[in-house]
Length: 99
Picture 1 (cartoon, rainbow, N blue to C red):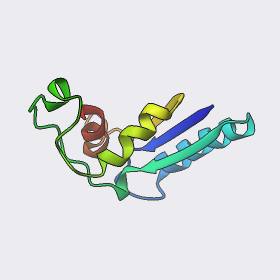
Picture 2 (cartoon, rainbow, N blue to C red):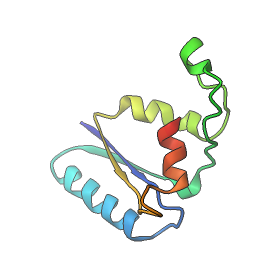
Picture 3 (cartoon, rainbow, N blue to C red):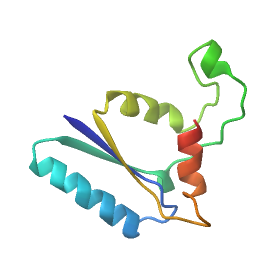
């Protein structure tokens, strides 16, 4: 089983990263393969609503999201962590979700 952890915190080493890593550690103990993605390290643009994903089944925006798509598709489960800012997830997390 492949478990992907995504940390939506714009700061490295914060509480969200610690919590996601703890959750991944528990899945590793159960025999899962894990990987963690820190959105603080990524440049992900927001969706521009061009609909190329609907027409060509490919996002036309060339950024770090291109390397994340295959990991999302290969994962059996995703652990997604984000701090709550102003009642919602961080802008980095929202950009990933929207894409």
